[in-house]
Image (cartoon, rainbow, N blue to C red):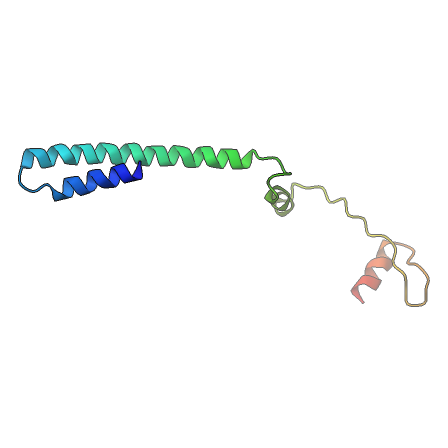
Length: 101
């Protein structure tokens, strides 16, 4: 379709002898261009909708966007850590304290 629009534009631009023919080709070019722009716009929207509806198994970005937007539950649990003396931390605050050290 793009090739056709470009051909119509070149044909219009090269026509210099006859004003009637030039106007006719200008009209053809502008109509073809408007159809082309409309088609591209429609296909972009369809492509975006198709992309958004992809399942997470085929679209790895779904998880990233969900996490970034805060739409994902955080199931990460901080467990106990082993201290340098060999014992385990007793609670969350002690675990976080040793993580930051």
